[in-house]
Length: 350
Image (cartoon, rainbow, N blue to C red; front, side, top):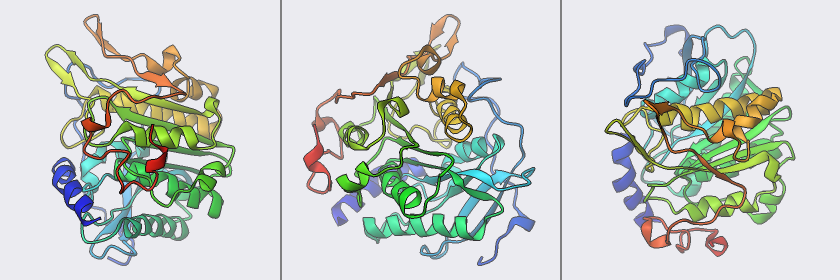
């Protein structure tokens, strides 16, 4: 485990770059540029376009990570508890500024998002999972005026993507969260711990799932994501496996590397059209039952789902969507291989 921690730290830290709530004395939030990198601008309407709400945040001391705060981003205009996304960050991404664009996007659209830091080094995987869970549970318990636990999503990247399934099981099954809407959005996921086949069989029937991987990722073997996607008890109609491939437009490279999305190192159309657009639609479908949201989030390869924007007649690579994913590359491509003895689900690798 120490070797894994050291390797993760060396690779991923470069991409990550008070006891009382502080809602009444908020600092100025970090903001992202209005204009995206690259030739393609933000969508102006529809799924993926920015919402109109004003983003504020409140925070509280992490229950298990000394010196760190759990942060809740939400709309200032909110007058009642909101559907909420619980976000598990990638290894090394302990500061919310690493992916602030995502949290601001969610809050601008009228929802809440909980960001919970966990230690990069010096603790076990189980301790990181415990830190995430206790942070999420405290947020839900202490902030019922902000967080509506009847409509809940779990979202995560890399280490956090792998962890999102166990955390979602605790929330959905053990706590009963998400009675009126549940989803998981896992990106570039690492190993999944604390997750048995029995648990995978027992996710509630209203759970939706997007599993997303990136073609240029050399960190996490896609087989880890394929394993969970195929073995979780969610109907094919309510889940999609999505591959994003890189594109070059007007001499700008839209990268599909491991660190997508990442406000700090790149902030471009792939953030908005590849992730935010699908998340926006998934929220609308899961929480509001909007069939138009399903066409975009879980369209099973529909044109509304896979079509990406163009510039001067040249389009970004369309999303590749399937319900029966297969590995596109040998395990030797990846730093963390699915068949590693450190993977508790190595027996499920294709």
